[in-house]
Length: 308
Image (cartoon, rainbow, N blue to C red; front, side, top):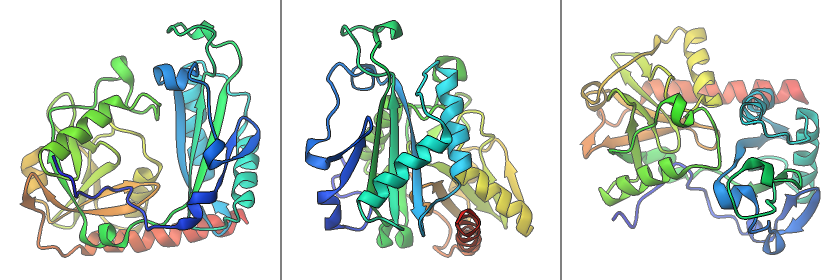
């Protein structure tokens, strides 16, 4: 077991998070008192959806894209949240303001089918309306992780077919990814590199995965991974800047021999990968990822400026 590993979600310490207020079903509650019922369908069954967003200069970056993903997911599982994108933004802004947050904050918005009348599976037993929770923390990615990168291990756990549990759902049912992360830690790595059902390189347990080979940026086809907002922004930025980018099948052979590898996600934006299965990736120089990182920072600045 890897007991001193890193994570793509490692954040710089911030004591202010010890005293935050959390949105729970329309009320702002101190962190120590924020609770949901043990009968809640999210706790009992993982029956719910969540969304992660970052606050930059008073604006939730790429808010519309995050809401599209969230509400598409809720519709797909017939979960009526009673919310609209506008009301979501209002509750997030209220929570951030109550905590004095204007930038470098990260939100985890969680919506479940709500409290069940009995401790059984059927969705009709959730009769009390949805549970809505928003946790917003002061949060900046770890500088050491962003600089040194993380170590991945390929694991036997795969992201499955859409007819089992579509990997595009940002659902509370994350056991598949938790098992993958445990397998990677037990192999001495930080996080897991997961393959698709056909054995091609797919994603990690927490983020989307990219490699760079001879100046080209490659990522999976997208058929078996989370439809990441940051993933799509990186693909779009590459196209706009003239960086060759391909969504394609590729194997571990190409990943091991890559010049660079990096992960994308709302929290860490672009996180470098130092090694895969004990094999160092490239020389440690990351010119393409660094170029993308600068393009992404500029995009965030433009998006937040336009929304103010």
